[in-house]
Image (cartoon, rainbow, N blue to C red):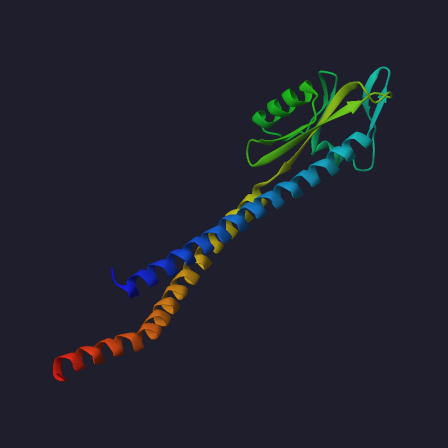
Length: 196
């Protein structure tokens, strides 16, 4: 393998590794940020749901508020294991998962069906230790997942263009750097052939 080819391959490999690392790191950081934003929205929705509840010795009751219709579309409310409120238009798979998670009563956050994410917030009694029910809220992640796919596709296209431009620039630089060496080699061969 010639020196020129080794230099080109080494330079291109370095460029590919660097661009690949940037591509992966950027998309991993974006995915983490999207998950953090979704979690923040879910926490706020769960807090809104819990604040609209009245916890008594008889159980959990939903207070009628100005935002009641909006709250009804966002989540499920369970009094112990009994479902007392749920969104009217939830899919059966989402409804079954939300009720199962709510009955478990543990604070958790998971991905659900149909590009959704769910959060369970236990409802605590007055002493704060005992969970007497749970609120389960849902948020659609469809638009954020479309954004992530678009960013991934865009970053792959940009990386390919940078790789192409970088390859041409590296080739030009290596050729320019080795041109004097090639000229000296030709001159030395000419001298050795004609100048005894």
